[in-house]
Length: 426
Image (tube, rainbow, N blue to C red; front, side):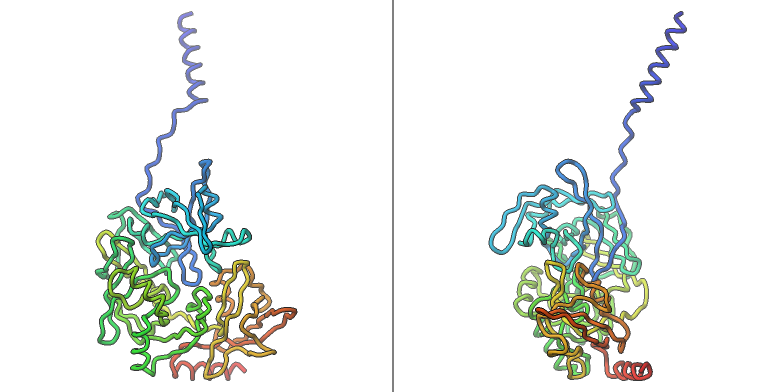
């Protein structure tokens, strides 16, 4: 009888143990994570996790923006996270979320004092920046508390606790602003030394207006043009049709020797803000376009940047249709202007062509609405001489315009070769 009672107790205990197993041991939080990257208009986009007020999580697209010190959110994200948003006539702001997650790793936002939120109509609540498929950026003020590796060739992004990431490649001693994490690299163009920011959030490189002028005057043989086409078409600002572009023959960027680097001139008013934020003398920035062949590692704790060459490839960065576009909040694209090519408009203009203020509706029959700016520029790219059929709309009119892909910012020898290839294809 006693044996039967003991057996019964053991069976009951075993059943209870099976129904209510002990809690599993919690997994240690990773010290390093690597996640896939989407490159859009040379911008690094990753998935970011948000914790919602009810404890659930939501995934949004995040922009790795090491050249910006400010946290930016869409109004939709602020609402999702339950932030208290305050607005004035031009913009909105909110206290930042406490943290985000990347690849399951918690990333603290405690260093951020506030989040900037664009003032948009309700229909554009998910828009942080028109033409950008992201709703939150990851700024330098956040990244600077970690080790960071942007692997352009393999489309990967790694973030790690300081000291836990092994860097490869040649290294450069950097100047890191301790207040906001912005990075400057001692550089040289010709026989002049400059500081140039490392800005992987910028789709192209910039030089201050005065340095651009000096180089353009001294090196008239360097390819140059007017009009922010391709990767230079950053945001669709009103003055982008007047931006000057040039290929710099050689830039010594820390230990790197970069050739044929396309740069835009920094408008003076924006450069003054840029230099003030850098807090050290600076002459411009090197954007992602110049480093697409590299794995770029930033060891913020030791003020060191690593450059590991991953491939050798010449990107046809300016083989495009010569439009300058403005992405709109409603997902459409407005034509701001047309770049010249060989002294003539590169796209037909006038009543039978495009005019500033027209809307680009489709490229080769593919609608552009709700595309990212990078996706539209992929549609507008190609081999020089190829034709693209642009569907254009203006009040009470919709029509098509045939335009050719041009080889912008090419040297004379390249342009002659392009013309020969084009003639053979006719």
